[in-house]
Image (cartoon, rainbow, N blue to C red; front, top):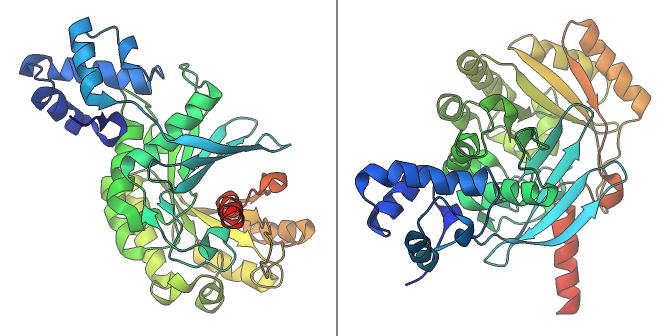
Length: 357
């Protein structure tokens, strides 16, 4: 009989498995499900023999049916600023990235939802890669588990305080798996991250935003990156399908349901979207729904046609927004010395494979 991998179960399917395959009696299913869930997700125990809350006979039986194997890290890079980037090899041989970004008062883990991407955003390194596949919910959750394992982050006071789905891929084009992964990440019996500790970032798949408001309910970040359709279409082809006006309407709805501001992500590109006129146009957009903006320093990668906006110009841009009464935070680029741009580490890995072949 083949082993089932624990990480491909959500809590409900785990209960079904324990009842059907392990033949645990009905009245004990919830208790046994919680015990294994807590052992893995709360304590970071990845050997069934260490599941001491299970009788020995039951452990032996479970070991014959279930595996706690995780994908493997194939490359780790640590930046001078403390950022850590892991390249993870999945069981099918595909590779995906996640990034740990420590700051003074919090530490964020940036995880991926797809291998590659279809959106072709001109400034995004992942946009140069073809979409290979959607990640399963287990492959998404495993990025959190692997990072926690690397950081020995199993105490009640978490080292990873926030999780963002802002890595490789568009989360709303893998909606069902992202939704299930977030349910697992939020589960209080395990990883126990509240909805206000999780952010889903979208390039603007407008028709999925209301669904996410009702079913996911985390913070939402919109990768806006331009204040007008003309500029946005030039750097983000998805804007041809979902215009800024549509995005604003759906963000209004999301904010009304979740009762939180939307975060606008705005990578600043020299001579493209960083003029004072752009700042004034952005203010007009921000007046239409509850939001704040992160002005992000562009992290260039080999072959890209864009340059980062100068720091003093970013500050001038931010001041226009702040003086209009809105929150504008300047985010400095992290991990510049370690191929920090999203998707870079995977590309380097692919190049090496081609060279070896």
